[in-house]
Length: 453
Image 1 (spheres, rainbow, N blue to C red):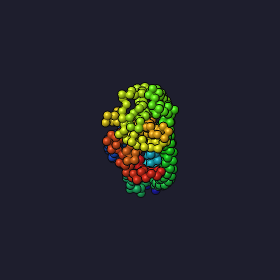
Image 2 (tube, rainbow, N blue to C red):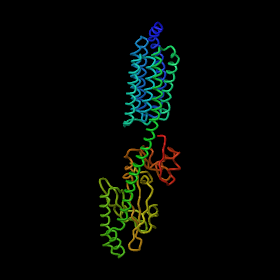
Image 3 (tube, rainbow, N blue to C red):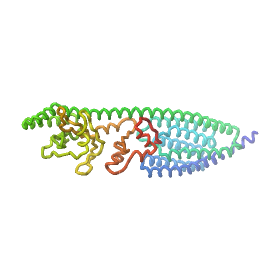
């Protein structure tokens, strides 16, 4: 027994050198596949995070090649530790650059380090390697929980490939261990069994923890997003309701009543004087509110009587020769027949001047309400609201927000290029991006929806 144990101990360094060499070669092959995946996804998406991760994988591969040289020179311990440190560093960088991988990365770190160390290092070094991998796993989970601002939502291909990549490495190394298991000394067998049991235990506990954590996080995300959406919805509705209140106030203002009374009495001088007062009041009102692009009063024939325009640094009153008849415009036709106190609200669109979309883009929503002098219809008030004033309210908060019209065209999207698909002819719609949500979004019923990203 003594002679046999001595022989095994003599063979042990040789076995470790061979095992370390095999483990390093397997890692190098896996690094090659990982490198191709990172750069391929990077070129497809253009995300710098994937290129940065590819660079880290290149460094990991270079360290692994250097480690192979160390191992072949019988510096097994130095070579294996170089692999372990560079592997853990690459995984930590991955966790920083790609979101929602903290727990998965932590499990991969512990598994791979434990398996490689168990048949390439001495028993004392195995314990240290596992302790280092556990510490790295804790750091990975912490980084992921902190959610760095530059982290990239994991592409589906990456999300699927990384666990497969790790599983292949683990299985191949486990196969090498099992192949040599009977030749291990008793202490080596005990360590191998202990590492295996630890790995299985970590998998079960980690898997349960991962499932519980992801479930709780998903529920919290839904709660936060619903609250965030509710806050934004309230802010937008308040803005729009204030615009409705404004136009009703203008239609019932004292200066409007005085002008209409002068017109009805046929007093041209008084009518001209009160018209000037009305225009001045409109201009002052626009300057104080500063959410309007135009405020107009049109008579029953559609002729503009007063028009206030946003000008450079303030507002101006249009000269009489610049006033036009708007009887053929949809906002006049949709407002002139309304009952007193009713308000027409147009769809939100980009403002058009002389048949062309105005640049820079000016999202506009129009309000119209009839004006009465007693029981007699006198005309309408029309205000052009700068829709950007309330659309920008959707840009803050903890989660991205979208606003679409009844046909699914984006009125607001975090990516400006996807906005105004109808007006600009780009055709971007929420139905194209999220076809599975179309029926629910346009059902008219409140609810929450979950997508893969």
